[in-house]
Each structure stands twice: as structure tokens, then as C-alpha cells.
Image 1 (cartoon, rainbow, N blue to C red):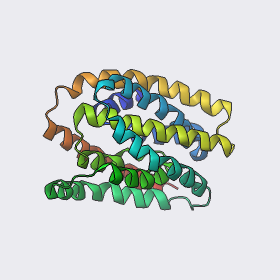
Image 2: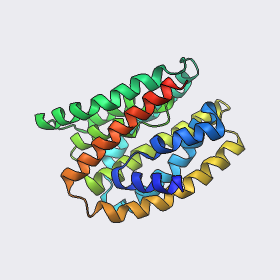
Image 3: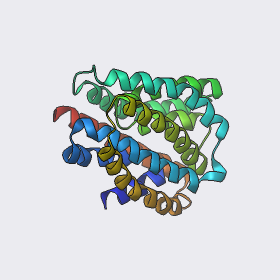
Image 4: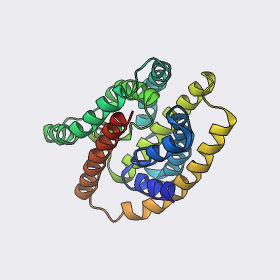
Length: 234
């Protein structure tokens, strides 16, 4: 049930599934297994969003972002094992919350990111994705500054994230952190995300662009608080 709710939320705003599911996954599988389980589930969830918004996906943007994200993910996943617990969650939690005013300030500057910028952004976000379960809130302002909104934002961000999570899963597999039982658990969780993506599509069409952005601000705040909570709980 939680997976369905998280998948629907992700289908509406483009992120939030990992934020909602990670506490439950950590309790069920432990912190080391929760990240690769979420990686498998996220592949399925993002794939379903790509299918739902196929006609709106900007494939050039996806390719540019992925060109930087893939090597970033590999580096990040290898760095994960060397980091002390709690540090990444604290930094990201504060970063997510700070992104709310920063994103609005950036929007007021009317900056426009081109494909080269998106490749550079992909490298940084890919590195973060290799370390933590969720970077969806980090992706948001950059894809919006690239000029994407609603269906184009959801579909393109999902396609780029899908490539990133596939690279992440392959890296975890090579590091020995993706045994068959983890893959099976990820598929079970991911199945509920697939349904939620198509449920969420119905609601996106009903949300005006400004309310869509406000909803994302609320999710950024929630993401930041959850990350800080996770850091304190370590």
C-alpha cells in the first residue's frame, strides 16, 4: 500500500517515492540492503513513468544528462563504502531544504540550462545517486531551468533517472551488493510503483503549473526533513 501511494506521488511530481519508502525499507532490510532494493524498485517506477509520458520525453536532454550521470553513479557507488554514516544524509537534508528558496531565486533570474549544462549536472547528481537512495529533489530545479514542466518534466526526468538507476544497479551487482533476494525484493516494491505512476498521470493534467511547483516545494521540505531524521537516527 505504501508503495502504491509513493508511486502515485512520484507520478504526480516526479520524485518522492524513495523519500517515502526508504524508512520502511531500512527497517525491513537494513540500511546496506535498502539502497540496492530501492535501486531495483526505482528502475521499474521510472520505466513506468517513461511509458506514461512517452510522447513528452525530451530524449536529447535525457542523453545529455545520462552522459554525465553514468560515470558519476559509478564513482558515487564506490565512494559509498568509505563514507561515515549520517554525514551524507545531513548534508543532503539541509541541501534539499535550501533548494526551496534557491530554486525560486534561480527561476526569478530566468536562467536557461542548455544540453552541455545538463551533462555537467548529470555528473554531479549521478555521483550523489551512487551514494544515497534518492536524488529526485536535487534533479527538480535543474530540469525546470532547462524549460521542462508537467508531462515533459516528468517523462524526461524519469528517463534520465532510469538510466542512472540501471547504472547504479549494475555497479552494486559488481560490488556484490545485489544478490538475488535483493533483486526479488526490489521487483516486489517496484510493482506497486508501476501502478502508482499511471494513477498519478490522471492528476497531473488537473494541476496548474504554479501549483505543480508549490507541490514540489512541499516535497523538497519533506525530503530534507526525512534525510535529517535518518541522520539523527544513525
